[in-house]
Image (cartoon, rainbow, N blue to C red; front, top):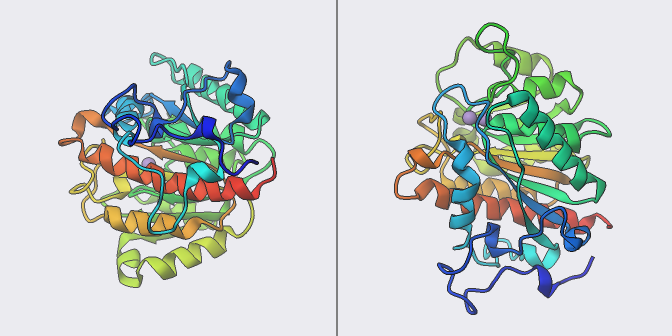
Length: 325
Ligand code: MN
Ligand code: MN
């Protein structure tokens, strides 16, 4: 892997003002799968404009476009960690998966086959959703060779069995399916930020009895970020790990643009601090989901999301850098 590849750097704000130009994720080059440069890409940012798994207020299908716009404001150096992700890995905007808004089954297949094209080429995927059901078809490609661990930020477990009388595929069920399908090793799964009223607690019971570590918001606030994240890192260990970030983990005062808000969440600053602990984890893929621009207020959730995606990209690039291509 080359240290700095000028062909894969974001357009600098010194060259073209950051409010100008055609927005791609982080102002990176747009490299669709059929582009010859695809084989050079280390980290592919992929939009999944889909909210077919949403059971409550929809709109996450508009997430990728809002994040593309907001990430044009992000610069290149993480001043807190010193990481420059675009110098560690060749990153590109791979465009959006051509989902089918009229069919869940068809869309699940389309997403998995898109991500198989990436894993085939050793491209580390950074997904921008989309609702949280998106994680399932991505994991079907990413965990094809065996179960992975997961660090998951959310106010919900997404471990429910089914909705509406036995319907198995919603944004409240992706990780139940992932455990059943052998995509996740539940003993290497940590969920952080859980809270709010629940249907019946069946999701928590399933997760606990399978060995998932659940960190409710009360514990996070009482113990603080550092000990919780140190424990999370030791649980996932050095084995391949997925990172999933649901924007509704952030307090809705700072991130109102989401379908299922829950008060009493962690702050954007805590989100940044938590993510910065993951530099040593072997992250094989990550997603950022549940941003619903129609519920946003003045773009503050998109702006939070853009910076959270940047933090994720920093640790993902550290990970990709350690893997020999
Ligand atoms: Mn979720
Ligand atoms: Mn959630």
